[in-house]
Length: 312
Image: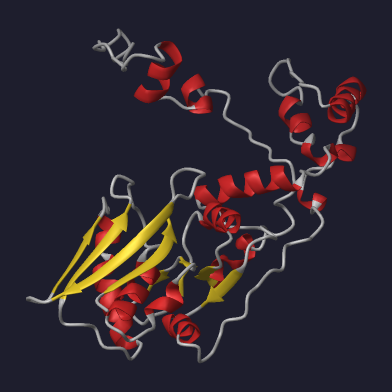
């Protein structure tokens, strides 16, 4: 069999659409092509995959290799496709049983030695795989954040040889289903009890936290607005599991390291007082076109310098 198929997940914001990795070996001069709207980091996986396969003790096929990442109109970024591409090549060259890949999803970046490195934005892929009912093989470095999804069937991997031994039936990788159950670490947050005085402001904080109300601080600089606001998360109730997963997903996509004990705390953001509206809520051509003209394309008028040297 010269055709093998593996499953992977792309990263599109907070979504993780399914990507089918098709590997075909054909006769002709040795070549390695990746198609399917793959950006530079994905194209560079050719060298990582080649070296990882050879250094793991397998034979890299000297044939014309074509890798298709479907759907073709979905942008592919990052090194998360290294592991499924490598396993697809081994299955297409009959060094692994192709039927063992059915219904399994793989994510991971390979080093030249075959070690599997963690990737950014793992949590959306874990949630999508759990909804689809597919076991997910992922880097061991991503296991901590992936364990937040209690319904997911996870198989942590540290090396390409672990994946091949599992698929060959020699040394199965035990599934990991444990979830993080640590209580919120409120010691990491500023304590409202540290504030001396300000009885009316503290009373307003307590009422807003208990009733779920909005709160607006007004006052001159140095009156304690930011100090009081930073202590509001410490008296708010813990996030629900759904809210905590949403917060952890945003942190995962943004590349922030996972911190156990803090994923169920209410987040606090302190933008600078000079931040513009665009800096706070986002902007750009697509944002303003949808806001002002939902059914029209965006048009940005020419900008002219102001007397201060900026743009109006």
